[in-house]
Amino acid sequence: MRVLVIGGNGRTGRLVIDEALQHGHKITALIRNPSTLPAKEGLNIVKGTPLEPSNIESAFNAVQGDFPTAVIVTLSSPQEKGTRVMSDAHENLVAAMKRHGISKIVTMSSFGVGSSLANITVIMRWAISKTGLGHSFADHNHVDEILKKSGLNFVLLRPSRLTTARKARVQFLGDDGKGLGVFAGMGGVSRASVAACLVEAVEKSTWDRSTPVISN
Ligand SMILES: NC(=O)c1ccc[n+]([C@@H]2O[C@H](COP(=O)([O-])OP(=O)(O)OC[C@H]3O[C@@H](n4cnc5c(N)ncnc54)[C@H](OP(=O)(O)O)[C@@H]3O)[C@@H](O)[C@H]2O)c1
Image (cartoon, rainbow, N blue to C red; front, side, top):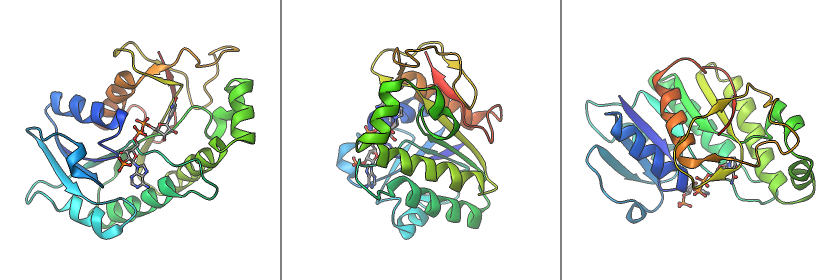
């Protein structure tokens, strides 16, 4: 299948592209600065931002006769009051997907978003309520709402702390992320493991319409 990747030049996004290409998929990556992503066979890079609907439209139509049938999002959001980078990107993506009859979207969210807030560490809960991290989390929470009411086949993966370790076995802990104990998720999950899960979530329907917390 052809997958549209949003955030493909980021640290996790690059691993998603590699993983998806290894699985035999074709990729269209919509990124602001194409020179930051090396050319690869099977990878089509489109210059632009998911904050501009016409750029999303260009990305969907980039390869004639080979339309993306799924979207993977690995965006980040700045720790600034009122940030809507993720929310606006998802609103634009949902509108474009509905227009084109595409139903599958898999987004990297975070442990601590939505119902999983109760099960993160006390330190993380403090940081979300007292620091700029809370602004990014508010944006993530808004994405939860947008996708849940979209009617699309969404998957919102909620990784614990991201690390640079190798790909390893992943625990799926349900929407709330219960069961990780007092130091919940501080051991983390490698970006490579998350990338593999994001691609698997596109290929299978196992986690459709759910928001699983994941950790190594
Ligand atoms: N750090 C953790 O422990 C942790 C744990 C769980 C979840 N997360 C989540 O993981 C995500 C970060 O993942 P990462 O570290 O792989 O990301 P990253 O390396 O920071 O890459 C972020 C991507 O988002 C794009 N982006 C950022 N602002 C943008 C904007 N205004 N317009 C268009 N594109 C924009 C960047 O493109 P440009 O290069 O053009 O800026 C880049 O492709 C965040 O959503 C975070 O909440 C993090």
